[in-house]
Length: 355
Image (cartoon, rainbow, N blue to C red; front, side):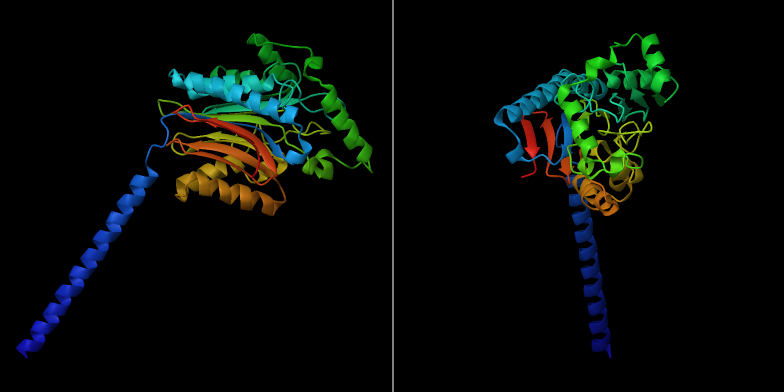
């Protein structure tokens, strides 16, 4: 009987030891995961995009490819130098986007696409990850750099979004640079509009985002996300919208949480794509929410939204993002996306096609 009792006690001791060992192992595993997740990859970094869509190498001349790469690198280095000197992520985002808005290569500022009425209407937004403050403007026709207006709305006004003539009046009061609307126009964009109009079969009912030509074309929106040395994230986006848009259509860019979002607890995101679907999927905020509430890595969160959720709705496009640890993500479900990044070591990456 004593022998049996000793055997039972020995067995219980071994089981308890095994459980403790397993639990300890789990705790060690948890600590490893935690340490890996919380590792600071970059002290500061910046990422930009210049649009996503059917961007194929076979359709790109060497001269155009070189021009895009040069402008992307020029823009991202402006932001990088601000961050390197200890400047804020907000300033880096704004000044970087200024470079892209001033270039006719992209669908933002000068070189923006035309509406159905052959006018140009611009949208932009910016968000501060530290305070969750944000500013946005839509349907702008005469402000040289819409991202500057978005920044002013965020910093000075009590509002988040202003549109049309009211926003333009506010821009004048804030002494932002005002230009003649013809400043934004380029022959290249006008030809694109005319090609699309020629393909319309029912001019009374057809609208821009139902046009197959639009769906398969390049979305030239520009955007920037950055992490500064103080750990603050910021995101900004600027666009001319969709070619042939009508009825005062506004896309995702000025909608906080759709095309732009930044939160110091998670990440900063800027999108480029078919705006209607980015609004419906609240793309930028959804990526942040997956990181915050589901514990996904930034890469996995972006993949879930861009490679699954948006295509399942019928939309396409891409995003750039950076999290609070300096992890960089550039993801799209299109053939290409103009993009560039620089990390805290000064290493520059520039890409166009999805290899």
